[in-house]
Image (cartoon, rainbow, N blue to C red; front, side, top):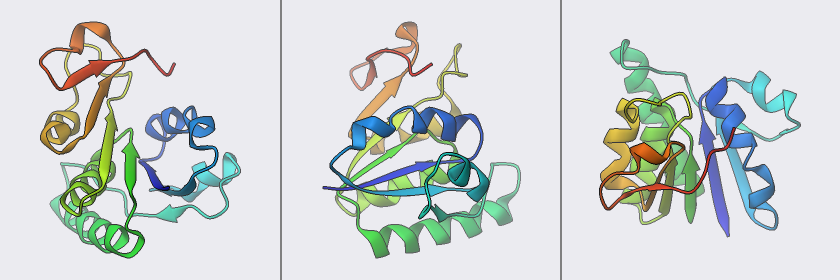
Amino acid sequence: MRVMAVASGGGHWDELMLLHPAYAGCDVTYVTTFKGMADRDGIDAALLLPDANRDNPGDAWRCLVASVKLIRRHRPEVLITTGALPGLFCLIVARLLGARTIWIDSIANYEVPSLSGRIALPFASLWLTQWPHLAKGRKRKYCGALL
């Protein structure tokens, strides 16, 4: 199975790496915004996306275009992301192209789901929170915390 695992650098990447054993036996492509994180964790062939956030529309546009190209080229069957905006872009594109998608909202979002997480909700095949009280509605699920 072709799996793409996407996360921004920092805590998003750290949370994604905690899921690393779950990908055993899969053809996994890792994608991040900071190669140093992948190198630190022994992921030699990680692909890079430009980092982006909602405060800089130019960077967000570049990241969106790069995400479309990346997903079209690699055609994952499953895409999993812990966010943030680059992960959201990849999740939306992958879902529109027929992939199953998994969004895991960061453990840092205790009070409300992240903005990216709220946007991801209709595009995620599975949407997970790491806080039981945020598992509201029929799509938000809680299966435990990564940290």
